[in-house]
Length: 475
Image (tube, rainbow, N blue to C red; front, side):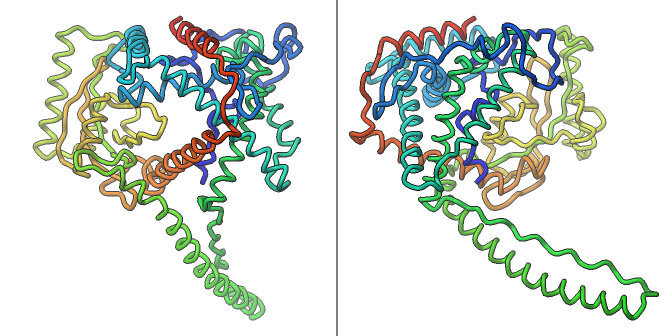
């Protein structure tokens, strides 16, 4: 269940930048990315870390939901509301400024229920934060009842040390204070980050306990095949032959046990995955492949950029398009497309990967073909096809062919790599998303109880935090 054990924000160790549409562009200081993280001197020392934020947006079971956490979860609130209504958060065909304006227009528009989407984001973000705190509170209660389910002080101390190390490293690398680095990366100071991290540890533990209690835990270890004795030398002595035979007898018994254990393991694993088949089949449609499934394409890239990365003239681009169309015609006439890719693609990796790319909607891999090519491949219900289509973007032309398709049970055609496309990966994606939904549904029911009713809700503070967040990400 490795995918289900992902943290919402993995104890602050992940680089989930708060910027909606751009990565970290902060200029490096005098530090080096390869340096060993060490405590910084002067303004970078922990002595200069700001104190914990004390203002809060609401209370749940008497526990304050601090503004720093609400601000942090605004990323999830915006993304969730934006994506569920528009289908995408970032449009590659638009500039950064155009994408930002698109987001702003959406947030200020009004939904059918009369609420602005900005207010919907605020409401959803508060729900996320409330669920986060409720899970933490429940975990602490469970730990008090059953010490085996408690988080130890050593575990907390070790995690706090990780946060300190990250703060020291970021401050040294970017030549700034620890708080400046943390706020740039997470929207909160270091001490707020430590508090968030500890709360996250309890929330994550509750999620794991819930999964175990509801039968969604698979912790069996696959049996290890025994090692067969090395072949006996033809000139071996009688004593050596006796030892070899004894070793072979032991090996055969071990193999017999291994095969029995392996059969039981595979049977148990199969039963576990069957719990998720229904969730997988719910996503099946006639018009497009299942979102969980993985399509594999092969592409030939013809660049329209010069050696300095500048675009060619329109006449030169037209020649490049004609070149791409010539390659397509050669493939249509029967020439092996993989050989064309290896011989003529401008992709730097074509020689090694032969232009193969696995399209997994749940992977954070960088796209190597245009978005419309991804759409075409994933909406094409034919698992494998000889058809080759021409696509383009600002960098060049792409000939794309769908060569593989991986579902819950099998792979048809070929894949770029077993590590990026396999039925086990599809199953893991289904497991992760369906468990997240089931857990969220369970938490939503808990939040309806009197014990976890929200009190002291500060609507004005939440609105101001939302405005601050939008303004910051416009800079």
